[in-house]
Figure 1 (cartoon, chains in turn orange, brown):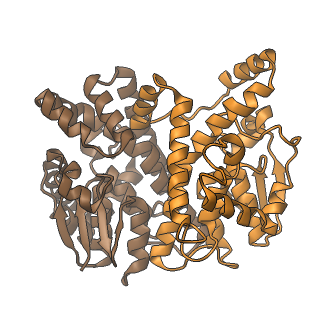
Figure 2 (cartoon, rainbow over the protein chains, first blue to last red):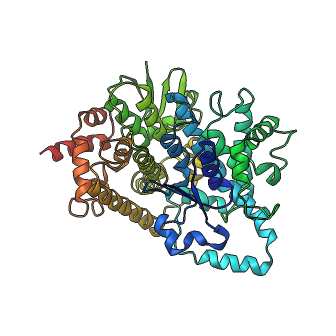
Figure 3 (cartoon, rainbow over the protein chains, first blue to last red):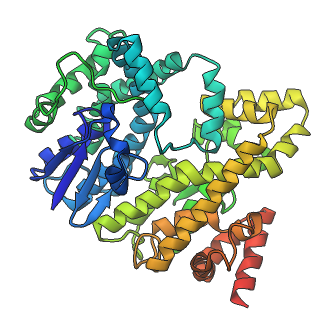
Length: 250
Length: 254
């Protein structure tokens, strides 16, 4: 039994959808409407105590940490292989996943929320949404140093800082792709799937950051991935109107 | 020969020491003294430009992410395996490591800073301190240091960190009531990475980590402290932390 509770084909949900299609695994999908706070309903919190999305159920195991799902899928469904088998290649794949998630995950969602999602709402809708957000039953508190850094940052411009982090990550991706077609080794891997989920929205979100003029390698890499049947299949599952954006609240 | 640049067998610095000792792999040990800020010194920045410990140099590459470095060591060298074969257990192994890295080690470093590092650096010459902070390569670490030096933590922040550590001990204890080790029936990287951060809690957080409150955690500590590889790792330490851990080994054995 394989079931995926997911939102739009974006971010962490997109990675899981792409990987399952790449692995040619039949699964039952359950759409969790994050913009309607479905991830905080009591029955969903039984699966994911902090309202994490996506969550995978596999033969009785509940895998509720979205950022460990790609590694799990590689372990559980080794064919077709989507990661190097050798120690150094596996380290690199894991390192790219940690790096892209840390550097890009929150930053892309923050910029997308403020630049795309909020402007599409009326003031009344924004107020209503923020009120519901404030009443969310579970909130993961930032720990220790993360909180210290966050507090220090909030006095500066958080969106500008997020864009700075995005530019740093894109520069590293562009540099890597200057000498290789893929992020790790000579083959498409879960590291590419993971980074694609954050970077594929950037040509629209930060056109000065990812473009044919500034980052040709990254753009060609995005195109190569977007053409894959598994990726097209995953992206086609969207329920939102084109151009409406699918960034979750940060 | 394998080159390991690291500090005492504690937290991130300790993970590869414990791991290599468990695997039985020999290595050259380069001690980077965090108490003397050697991790930001120009010589070390040539090894790791980010100025973090540990760094493992092997097969012409420098590897610096301490938790996935443990998986690397496990895969790259012969010897016993510390990665479960079952995919769900591997996932749980990585989840314990991730929670240590993102939730619990940061809470412990708030408490550690408050008790040791903060008072120590505030005694330093301010110009000297500024010079040392300016040479920290990672912006995030610079912000953290500057903020922590300027302002002491509020009681609310300290209590938040203590609560988080107490929750961690409860989670470990509940898990270890069900399975012998954190990821399942076998000793794994989850235990090694968690132990590297949780070994001293009976001393530093005795109200949260004691035999009455957390008997399963306590027995888990006893079993790990009894491992020869763990003793060998602590014998490489140079701080009172390692000396205290060696005392714990004797106390648990008695």
